[in-house]
Length: 486
Image (cartoon, rainbow, N blue to C red; front, side, top):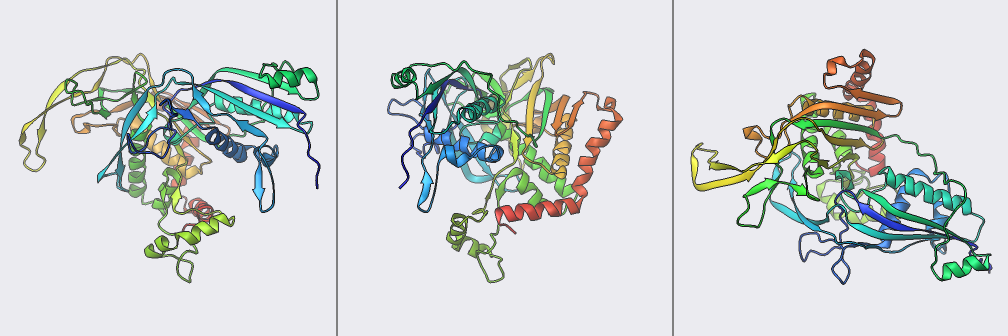
């Protein structure tokens, strides 16, 4: 029997964080909407400590598993062996008033068309809600420096928006920042420190500057700066009978373009480009970039290892067993690797009510008693720019080429966003873009003809890779193996 080892060091990292974009922490309940936010008995939203722990463990395993033993701190259990977690997370509780907003969603099919009766709604915590957090790390070994490095890495990655909380983070949700933070270090071999820890008194760390683990970034990122050329409306429907029938969407008191709307537009145009260029395996290329459902699952159906549609439903239990046994496979859900930010409208723009008459699409005649009004956002000037950030996690060159072609269409006013496109709304105009990927750092000017010839060649090479069936085939084989799809 092994002897119990007492902790000789504790680190407590605490403070206040704030969500800078909408936040979804679902509770699994649907009493108010199709997906309600997790709330305590007082009706205040909070973030469960277990949820935060899971997010951080996943992040550290993805990026830093070669730098320290994840299981040592977060715990593990395999058969009769294991150890408890040495990192303890308190629930992240609300400190100020939080506004809950109800957002609408519409399920669309593969062609980008809304499915019949597929509308749903969900709750989000509006930006600027403040939460108190506390993380405690303990160790019986002389791991003080390693523990401090973990905290430094956590702090840096949150500040640089690598760690997000909750659902729909690929659509710009869940970004957080620190408002206050305090780091206390307790030497449990020291009587004074033990008393301070028992009394929950601060023992502020005053040692050397904290150095985080080096982060290797293999993500492609493009910041697209643009203006609304004329008008824009992402429709929000009010229950107030005195309000317009539809007005432009707002969040946190600001006009925005939701990431959900932008992702749908970008995906639809991406699939159109792939079809136009007749790219081989275009459906797989789109699914592995934008996310979706795999149609078939390996080794879950007939004898030749290929499942038909019925087998893929009947034998889901076999796939789950395969996953539990350690195989890297999916039950059919493939996550998006494209992150789309929500866009806060910084451009000087104003809302104005316009009355319209509904037109019968078959006869082109006006529909009786179908007068309605909408309240779009109209551009006033171009002094300030709006910014859309697109990030691809661990991309291949052909995916970068596809995103560049989509940005080109947005830039050149060929791709509209939002509603009422048939009367000219939603046209954007590119002003500048900043591209970062590995050693690539390119700034696209408004007049792209002024771009250096060397940079033009570099970008064109990525577009050319869309037609490179060899690279795509190698990539598909790799992704098929990860998700066990065919």
